[in-house]
Length: 115
Length: 118
Image 1 (cartoon, each protein chain N blue to C red):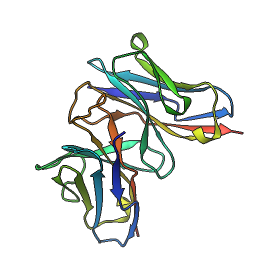
Image 2 (image 1 turned 60 degrees about the vertical axis):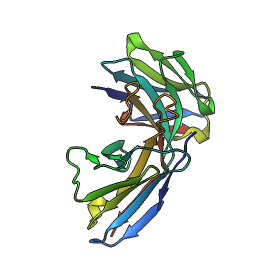
Image 3 (image 1 turned 90 degrees about the vertical axis):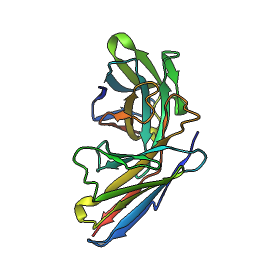
């Protein structure tokens, strides 16, 4: 069984400040991990994914995440927040080659960026 | 990346009517699609897994007679909300994996359909 825990349902940062969104996972097998972003009234857009290659993964819009097996974490970071980063962020996990198995999502973290 | 579309993007209907939502994979064939429901400020709740040419697999607590799923082709899955009621008002999102491209088992999501039942 797999699960994802996102710490903090709401994170607020100042424009230009570091963004850190936390995600911890539980998986009985080496996982694939994903971060998605959702803007209001829109679907989910893939930010980045970890698929057992490099542990530091770079995504779109300046985001990156580091897979830490020892901490079972996959936190999302961005050095400098922009107003356009304000959105809902979801961490998700799946088992490799899981075929028809859907992703398991965390509850989401709403990021607010203050001017 | 792969593209998934949904139609309509929003719909308002009267209580008791049925509403059909389409999910299409535009540049790949999807043997499996997933339907999610999302309430305001909440995460996605998986409703069912749609399998081309066979019956959908519903999650516990989801009424299969209420939410009819048809996956008649490799590029189209439909979700029909039958006899809709105000409590069915929600944001419905579909997703699909490209079985050929795989790309780390990435799921591609549609833009969602906002259903409002009056």
